[in-house]
Length: 416
Image (cartoon, rainbow, N blue to C red; front, side):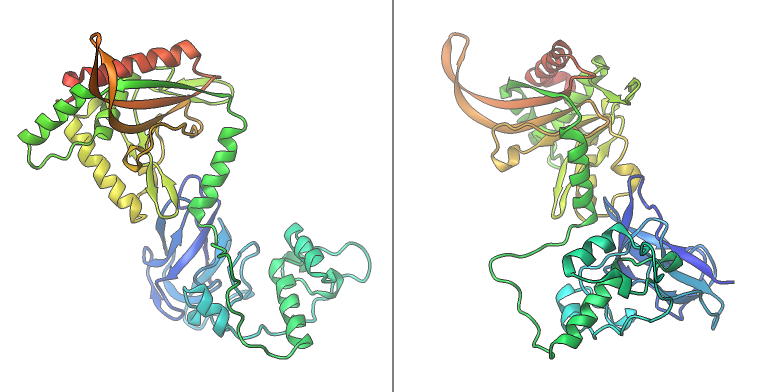
């Protein structure tokens, strides 16, 4: 009996995945554990592996298709075995019409749109009921209303004859083909480019809405004198030619130590309770082409500056290659975002729920300040703490920043 291949939840927060590339073709022999395809989740590109032995009988969706978790993407069984049905899973979406054959699908959406064959007419059976409400998904109804398509005239391919998105789109394309003669491929519209959302960008958008609206956030900004930290870093670099210690590494090390002293800041809001974490796991925001991801430095309060520096570089490199494992970007208790390398003086960062705070770090700059009663040039840096007021009161946030500033201005205890 044939075995279903489904879109698995490859990360803790994954709701849908984009099948980037099939690694096995129809007819290929399959063993348990073989990599069938690469799937883009909300955080990284992961491997979808086989859960049964046999032959890949059918690829139900082509590369480039986005499908919900638990939806059908393929079949594995004995050679020559028939598979039930043959339609793509309900809810799967594509950026452009499907080619005639899944194997011929090109990863480039422009190539697919140019060479795709017109879809075959929709089947005439089963017919929708002669009376009563037509079974259709909400998305199909919206598209039909926008395109002026009569749902009653469309045979649904979803469960129990339900009309789904692909049915309406197919009817629209068939109608356009029959109503007008073939035309040359349309050139891209002038003046703009529509970029499909990656799974990561979709998740970022959802998380930001969850954060900035419901969370009562306030901000505390301080300016740190970084002269001694600068001198300490120069001395470390001179003593260790292989060492690469950034100021951000020093901030992570100092924040981890300060969080150990302020458990209300190293906490999660869980609706009916506040969870104060005994361990310090710091998420470090890393910019990648498609958005932002936060690799986690676990037990940062127990690690040396050298260890933190090496781990940040290694995780950030794999984050940009989209090769992080789920456990490497989840489970942070506090986050740090640094835009100083881009010349930003100061900014406010958005809290990553359920965390209670995030630290935004600006650039290190030399400026004229009054120091010991005289004007002097000192290296200064501004930091802003975004706080969830449900967890952190103003005085609590201020006390944490005071501890953090004291550590950065007297960094000898941090540089071991």
